[in-house]
Image: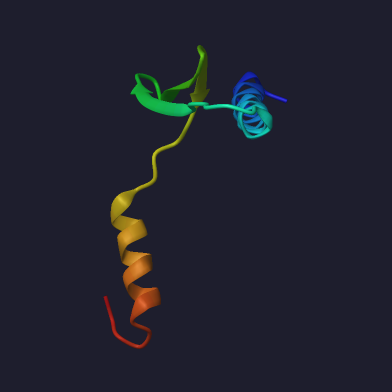
Length: 81
């Protein structure tokens, strides 16, 4: 398993754990997630829940033109793009 996949899974596990902890807590809780784009095709994921948990994960941006085209053709079958 790559380092990127491990960082992504670690961030997801931490988010699930913190969410469960907040649900079990008998008082008020706050959970916030921020994602920022970094250079070299990476994102920084910051989870705030009393502390800050930071993860850097790789991602691949989608081509918005092809996504828009495929969504349009799926919405209007039979009509050319």
